[in-house]
Length: 280
Image 1 (cartoon, rainbow, N blue to C red):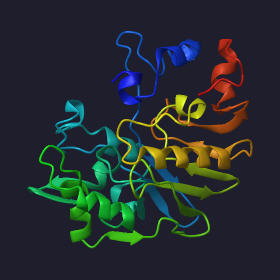
Image 2 (image 1 turned 180 degrees about the vertical axis):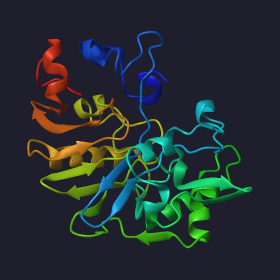
Image 3 (image 1 turned 120 degrees about the vertical axis):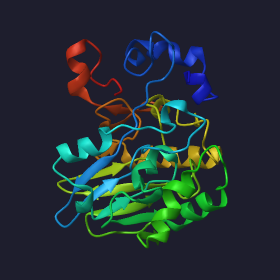
Image 4 (image 1 turned 90 degrees about the vertical axis):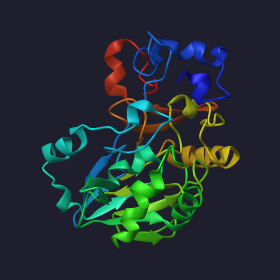
């Protein structure tokens, strides 16, 4: 979709000063549509191997986005193997929320049944998010709950937790509702502090305009409050922010500049003549 289709508050006047860095990495010059990656993250801690979210999956029903509907490719599992990890080695799958592009590989189809892709993993889900997904189930055009969530519950692999649940001293959940009722960010402590932001923001322009809500936010007002609070909490303190849909590699630090926030990654843009404080 185009920027204004994804973000109803977006205007051509607001975009104009930023087109020099938005194009071609974030907006296709050929179509004018946004370029949004869909991705998972593999985390190795001192104790566990963790997957944060699980992309779209194969064989899933999604009539709204034809390129996600009934996919059949080996990219996801091949890349996991290239990272030296077999599905059986995953200890935990942490779900930021239960939309199809974040939980699709929770399951795979075997002999006509959806079974956990990661058979030895505990799937950590915020209880509030599970209840909202369960309440919204029944859409024949998108069977996210029926195919990606319910089979995990039936297999006894789901663990329902509070939105501020702490897995251990290295990994924890942070409540970030708005995009969905039980959306959480994932905090990570190593030599510093990092956070996987999930879908609390989808596009770098939301750093400059935190009030711009995404078309599919279930509670736009709450999503705006969450975004402001998150950006404030992460700004100018070196906390590493790892985003789900920003251009690859989707990582940087937040800086406050006048009335806007910026996600900075100097090493990418410094050599291209764009100011070092340019957004990712």
